[in-house]
Image 1: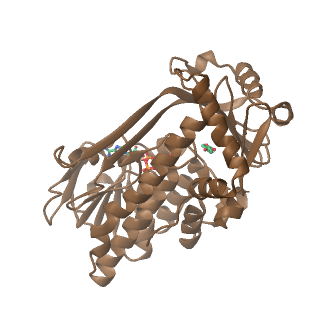
Image 2: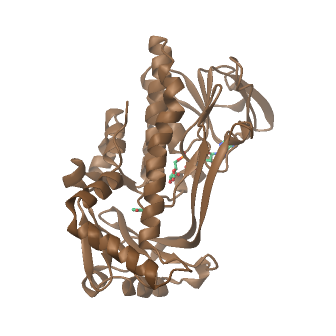
Length: 398
Ligand code: APR
Ligand code: PHB
């Protein structure tokens, strides 16, 4: 859509065209609710970002229920459980299929974003990219609006609600008064070095707890593998040529698994910092936050994208109840319901990070305590069941 013809009014103005914003826009559209998505970056930039890639069963069901399951079912890989390996060749299968009843699916966020953009385009959805200086305004009145600049012109869109789906560095969270917002935060003293390679992945996800640090073997599809190793925050990707990466990751796995890793040139390599972050409440007046705008998890356990999906599940249901049934109970309940699920995933990701990484000030006691917990998971069905239930993601409350 040309900037000059940017519409002046919509029902829901959505700030951010990542997975949260696009998914919300599409679900609202299927219920006849109009929205406009305002994205700061170019579409090419958004589509190139590589992020996590494991979908909980609840996220898989959501994509299928809105007609976006076809490519995921074709290209994604069912992921019935993950292995954890540690110590002197100890192994544990976290059998999520057995404990949670439905498979998870390995399918990358990059592909999901492509599918969502294609669906919005096909339905004539309005996604305005390169929207600069987006500002949510009058959020604590009944007549909120957003302003922005695009192609050098100023715009204003009036709306009923604003959805802040603009990620961790967005503007929407900052529009909530500091006197209202509570922030909980934790930084981790290491990073994840990740590579993508066009090689066949291992048949299962394998997490490794090793004295040299954490490692993870993951996948995107039959010919696309994703691997990570714990690295120092001082490292840069130039310190890690491919040969060094493969050599290092193989030292962190038992010999048979290391031998099964198919190596090849990396097609992407990056270092991510790990952070836990929650902002409460997730609503102020007519502004509702969803996804990374409200919370960040360390990648261990792949909860980030799934939390974005669960926020959008609750928020879309609440907005649909508002428009279809004139019922605002779900809008009132949104922040609390979303945060209950967020906190479970926050605690679980923090715990899994603690369990599987080497922290700089860990001593022999910490190491034994983590190994004991893994050992306990191998001996107690109940403990493993609780771990698997959380790894697979809690069901939605409504
Ligand atoms: N105005 C408009 N758009 C903005 C602004 C702004 N001021 N600030 C940020 N954005 C855009 C970003 O460019 C990005 O495309 O908002 C989008 C937010 O997308 P994500 O950061 O991907 O966040 P979200 O959509 O909530 O996706 C869930 O959880 O853990 C992660 O990997 C997971 O990225 C995924 C996320
Ligand atoms: C990934 O494939 O990117 C991935 C998988 C599992 C995790 C984290 C990341 O726990």
